[in-house]
Image (tube, rainbow, N blue to C red; front, side, top):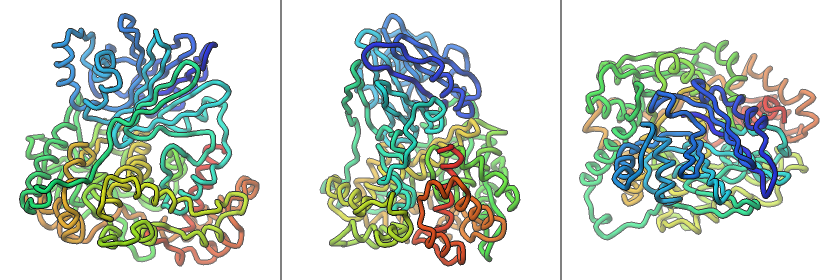
Length: 591
């Protein structure tokens, strides 16, 4: 829920409330229900509110407790806030609201930065200690809620979206070559702290950053995954793991039902979202609203999976909404979807989530979604290729990366080309430092804590919040992820991937959605770029803005223009769409 922003002036001086106001105005879609800006000398906070918990004005932000000497802005939801609130009351704390926001404020007053280890939820938080002058920024364990920042001219600005930071002004908009390498090579995954712009960084997940009055900062990582396995883990049966996973997922889904408004489900028809629907039905939720989307076919490829979502909707008697998007409406809405991206994201389902969220927001404010299951339970095709690998980083690159270093040199202008394979170097460093011995576990650790954060999770947040819709992801309950880390890889790789999860699902949902071929969010018009779509991307990549920027070699672009359907990446993406999307985003943000 919501959007946060602020400015911190180092040493002496006054923060600019007008800059914070501009950032907050730019995030109106994230919080259409209310807006607030407060300034306390060198620190100013702004907030956009989407009312989900405590719908009264007592939950308004920025929230200040003069007696405790704290001010706070918060984006997200603390699912166990009622239990933590009860514990704080026993310790003598008094509450003036029933909001989860105040639980964070009181929790900080009681435990300091250790409070975040007690929370189940998704959050980005900024806290100002009035007496010390320190400001603390914090992000949830999986970076489900974004937090961007920029430091320049003795000031720090932060916001829930990169475009909001740009709206506040004073940002270096030059392209970061290393981030560009990640974007072009690692399927648009740009790990924290980088973004595509040199002047904008993002706080890493599971991190609390403390900023001193003079601008010095220190980071505290309060949670890190482990794939270490005890002897009893290795000896446990597949059935035991199945039952433990199902119990853990039941708890995760139940936690994410907390709200003072109805909660629905984004139903793709795959095993992950279908299982969420089944578990909500088991919890007794009546008249559950479910939503599916499909697109026109292109190049002979089907653009929807309605046969599976219909099956689940009929099985559980949900209040189902099926949304079909024709070609003209898809193309018409692409500019809005691109503007909504805090960073350029190449996956086709961006437009799917954008339009699906538009329709869902007409009915409800909160949904549960199935993101994270493939990264946590080994559902992707590259995990089996790492079994027994003696060179896991190279095998990971071979299975996942869109381009080799030689192909990067063909595509990228020399002015922006990195001398080494920066993306491979990042993977090698992460694999070396992972608390995992098995090559498959090394990849799962990387994907769950880096790729997932800066691709699927970011995608869902950006496009749901573009319409004031809050999306919750039960597969990223940290206790469920910790449980999955203990499961030996063979149980996850079984049945073509996600074996242990599929066995758990068989106890809940019809087998027809479990044994189906693995599907992706199909938007074939953006994979096979033809007709008006080809005209659109050619115009984007040859206009004055693109020519003056000069990111890509012209010979490479000419090759793509001549035969766009030929150049498809390992992850079934269009090379032409990838370069066009980046240029569209840069032009949309006026970079």
